[in-house]
Amino acid sequence: MSQLSVNHLLGIKYLNEADIQLIFETADHFKEVINRPIKKVPSLRDITIANLFFENSTRTKLSFELAEKRLSADVINFSAAQSSVKKGETLIDTVNNILSMKVDMVVMRHPNPGAGVFLSRHIGASIVNAGDGAHEHPTQALLDSYSIRERLGDVAGKNVVIVGDILHSRVALSNIFALKLQGANIKVCGPKTLIPKHIESLGVTVETDLRKALEWCDVANMLRVQNERMDISYFPSTREYTQQFGVNKNMLDTLDKEIVIMHPGPINRGVEITSDVADSKQAIILNQVENGVAVRMAVIYLLASKIKS
Amino acid sequence: MSQKVLLSSKEIHIILHRLACQLIENHLDFKDTVLIGIQPRGKFLADRLIRILRDDYQVGDIPLGYLDITFYRDDFRRGEKPLEANKTQIDFLVEDKKVVFIDDVLYTGRSIRAALTAIQSFGRPAEIELLTLIDRRFSRHLPIQPDYRGRQVDAINKEKVRVMWKENEGEDVIYLVGN
Image (cartoon, rainbow over all chains, first blue to last red; front, side, top):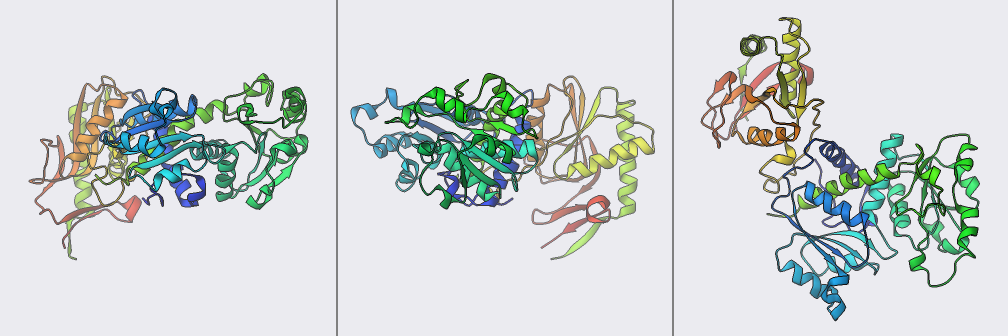
């Protein structure tokens, strides 16, 4: 078996296609493991992992923690809200203090883009980026591609549209990198104000008409409108956003094929997708969550195999 | 690198039939027995035994699974090469069953130790037996011995036993490979 080409998972940007395939093949094995009566393997019993969340998270944190526990790693959790960060400690000091307790791997979410890359230059532990600002969220992109591969057999050659708030979305950027590496065709769709300038340079096309985008695609990845990151108004009202960029069941039923609906969660029901779409057979939103554990187990397992004992 | 034939195709044929008969002797109709091939190489032996039991001795419908032990090994991060996983396929529970582990070569016993842990994820077996084609005695690191053995071999540590199967490598033959 080949190894990952990297010692950290800082972003999809740093991976190659073989890395992604290796992660997926390993995740296949872990998916079988987590469907056993006893869902746990002892591989990482000598590894300690710190989950450092400097920004709120529910599902990603739970998913990582479950993945770590299913691999038998020891886990410590840290949330910025209850820490010395509030007292003015720097990121490196915080992390070095934690590493002094003999931690082998750090899973970090941070509001600043590049926080993971910065940390990797200064500390010895393996780092997994669990989201850095509006930059990258690599494990989300991996589990999205893994879920497409599971549903459609392959990612290569598929048409994928990413709809919504592209500007503030780390999920969108990581997905674009991951889908590109695997040979998918990508469009982004959303209000012009929420589509970054020059995004075409990443090899994607922009479509502002949702209907046209849905007619073109095999998969629609619906992103959440990130109100918490918006310092100004990017569109007149939520109602208007929904009218133009929300997906409902009628719209899907009038397409000439059945497209796959994805959502990284948390869903704002009735805004980006209606409830009947979210709960329909076309939606693989809960499969994404299940696959998230398997994919994160694969990433952690493969990175841990590179830590010298 | 030298290699000598340990077992020829004909000898393997005779041994497999003997092992099949020994299994029948202990398990009769295999009512509560399941066979588990240890991945990757025990799979071929398990497949072959199932076929012999079915075609030559009319014992069919024995549950067969494959168990991968990669994630249970005790040498994760100790070897030069990363550990490559294989497919685990066990579509039944082993709760209260008589489990027979099937592997081609028994060497240090560490794989079987890992398999004993791994199988617990699929229930609590009534008992577990071990069938192995080649038993490299004097090489054990753990107190594990086979219940059914094809051939016992004295091989020094540097030597390797290579088992080849018609389905995979084109012929049935077992080599002892020296340096």
